[in-house]
Image (cartoon, rainbow, N blue to C red; front, side):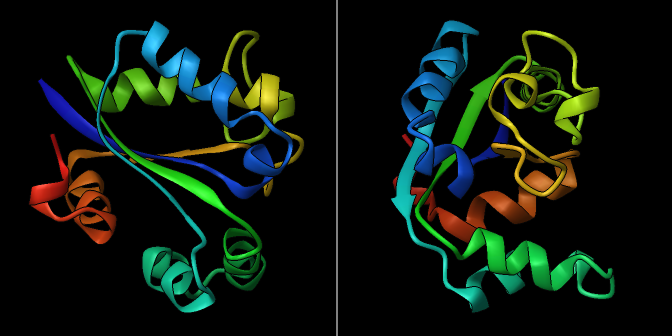
Length: 137
C-alpha cells in the first residue's frame, strides 16, 4: 500500500463540491487515513508551496490557497500517487480528460479543485506538513 497527499482546494470547497469529491475518493477505492478541514494561512501556504517560490505564479497561488477553507487528506491505496494523479486529471481543467476531478470541478489552471503529490518524495514532505503520525489511522 502507498500513501499520497491530497487537497480539496478552496474553490471546490466554496462551490460545495467537497462532498462530491470525497464520495469519488471512496468510490475509487482509496482509504482515507487522514482528513482535516482547515483554513491555511498565507505563511502556511508559502511553506507548503516553497518549491515554487521563484515562479511568477507563487504569490497568486499562495493567495488563492489561503483564501478560504480546504480539506487536506492522506490517502492510501495500491499505487496511490499515480492513481490519485490519474483521478485528478491534467492541471488545466480544459485539457483534463472526461471523468476526472479537474474536468468536472476545476475552472482554471489556478483554480483546479484538487492537489496531489506527484512523487513519493513529495508525499513524504506533504503528508507530515499537515499530519502528525498519531493523526494517521
